[in-house]
Every structure is written in structure tokens, then in C-alpha cells.
Amino acid sequence: MAQQRRSAGLSRPRRPVGTQAGPLHPVQLYESVVCAGLFIVLVKVTRRRRRHGDLILMYTMLYAVARFVLEFYRGDADRGFVFGGMLSTSQFIGVLLFVRPHAEA
Image 1: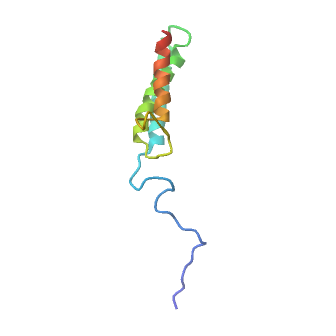
Image 2: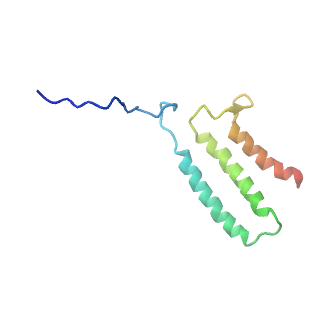
């Protein structure tokens, strides 16, 4: 009789728990690439800084734009929505971070 292999009671799920059935974008990898690009831009800008605080202002605004765009590629429903589902919570915060520096200028 052929020997039957048994698992230890664990089954491998076909997809990660809590995700949609379709394929997902690797948003974490996209964000890593964006952050590396931001680092390179900010290092180059550091040499030409004009006022105190320009570097952090530029980082905040560029990251807000990047985060706003990356949120469109996320496939989870747990990210929260504002304005009747038009924006995710992260997109809303990104808009606030982008608009707020201009309000004081």
C-alpha cells in the first residue's frame, strides 16, 4: 500500500487573508522606489537650500503627492474612506500636507 503523506494540519491559503480575489500591485515596493527617488532629489537640493526648513517642506510636499498617487493602486478596503468614498484616509492626509504649507506662504 502506498504511504500517504499528511500535513501537520496546516493548509496553505490560495490568497492572503483579507485581500481581494484578483491580483494586487506591490504598493510597498512602489513606495520604496519612490522614497529612494525622494532621497536622491533631497540630497541634490540640500546643496542649494535657500531658507531654513526648505528641505523638510519639499519632502513633505513630494511625499504627499507620491502617497496620494500610490493609494490608487492599493487593493484593500480597510484603508478607510472620506468624502463618501472619494478619497482614502491617506489621500486626505496627503492633500492636507500639500495644501497646508501654501496657506502660510
